[in-house]
Length: 108
Ligand code: FES
Image (cartoon, rainbow, N blue to C red; front, top):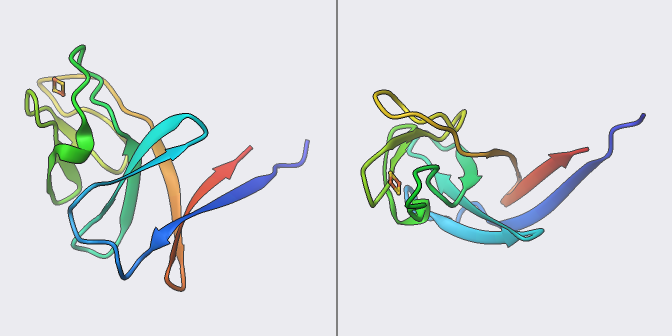
């Protein structure tokens, strides 16, 4: 089967503040994107995998990680993995920046 690729425009790259989560609702899923200090943009689901389900857009970003605001789990913004000693994983999404536009990419 041929893969279809869908790009959803989210926002302007230059207007995106660094390290502050921006939340988008896409297809019923809540996604948070972060512009990191290295200039990349990362997208993950906006919910900690911890049973309390903290809101990750309110978390503190350091390097390629976000710290959940509730219990401080450290979550990779690259692969979504919760770092030891905690465990779990959040969904990650593909982002592409072209010109000034930040796009969410779905390959189906
Ligand atoms: S809600 Fe517990 S670590 Fe996020």
